[in-house]
Amino acid sequence: MIDFEIINAIIVLNYSEELSIIIKIYTIKKEVHMPRQARVKSNTGIYHIMLRGIDKRDIFLDNEDKLKFLESIEKAKEKGKFNVLGFCLMDNHVHLLLKEYEEIGTSIKRITVGYVGWHNKKYDRTGHLFQNRYMSEPVNNEEYLVTVLRYIHQNPVKARIVISVKDYKWSSYGFYYLFYNGQKTIIDGTLIENYFGTFEEFSRYMNTVNDDECLEANTVKHNTDNKLTKIITDKYKVINLPELPFDKKKAIIKDIYIKENTSIRQLSRVFGIGKSIVEKVLKKDE
Image (cartoon, rainbow, N blue to C red):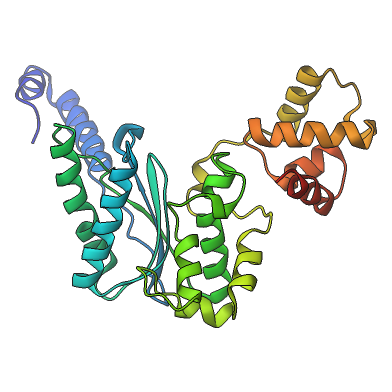
């Protein structure tokens, strides 16, 4: 509906100007209210989901909050019959790896609605907690399935919260340990067990240093090679980075990997050394 003041403004203009303004108003309205792009459907029914806090606010303020969210997943799973293949709870976002039974959006609502009500009551707040539109991507083959699961488990490592995947208790990694040892958990691990026959194989893959980029990678701003080179040369007073002695390169690589939003491939290019060498440097640092 056009605003009343805008209508009054149109009335006093001549016909040609009025027509022009109406066309412009219609164009703006059409652009604003265009329907959202349809989600890409998964051929396997498996989706990688990411939920973010609205306005980048924290979803979890303490461990009780995280426990409650896991309870919400479990209750939603009982009703919706979906499978939980992986998860990681970070302070301001959540990664989920789900195989749908009902429509995936319905399952997400089952998980979030109960938690939001509890959270708002606990912290005496009202309104939304999660962004209205969750992010999702289809997982259409086994290779990408295990890649996404590793990406999810390594979220806290790449965020520098912990050194190793096993040290973060709010992901599904520890639940897989229980699954492989015959205990019933929230995780439906059969698909992953078919790929990794033992927990040792599973753990080795989940802890492999990598450059996996999934789902939100396109929204993350990276430094260009030139900008990263300038950051390094300015900070460490280096004139010719590729000719720097290897021991000094190692120290800088470890430091810059923690402090800058960079990747193993980019470090390989900037330092003029092989990708596998960068991986070994970072692996030793763990």
